[in-house]
Image (cartoon, rainbow, N blue to C red):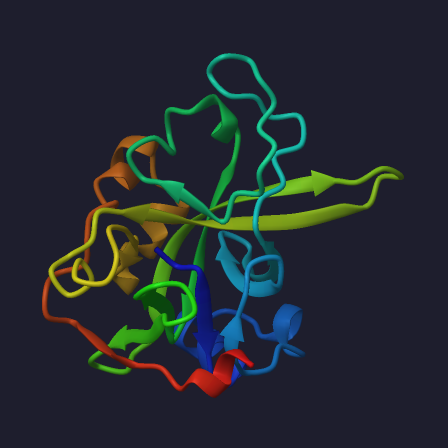
Length: 203
């Protein structure tokens, strides 16, 4: 599942591909290594904006009524519309060039770079929320949605992000829960390119 992302093309190309205004995110720079808790560009029904990657579930509780403490960077597709902790969240799309996964033992891990063979933008389904800090400051937040892996990914990880076809983005953003749920499936096999990542990216 996505633990690090990369977007190395200019943000203007992302706005052009999605046919949305650039202004809210025009200062965003290409980044080969985007980590949780950093800001990322997110598409919502209102266009592109910057959000913190990781939902701080302040005030949210689980099915037993207990507070959820950990920051959520990925939400499971099987429960995202059912768990009380996700009640009232919005939907968004995270456009990136790809993501990284790691295999191997601690201190000997190998990083893998995953992107589309077509070199097109990859669109992760996501959920959004707003954290209100003491004093009233608000912080938009996002978490990607994951599903079981396809054959391309299963050799290196047991989960992958839900990747949307561009024509399905309006359904994800504005459709019913039932229609959106139909999109939460693994990407078709054979569309991803997986290669060893340059270790210097993470230094």
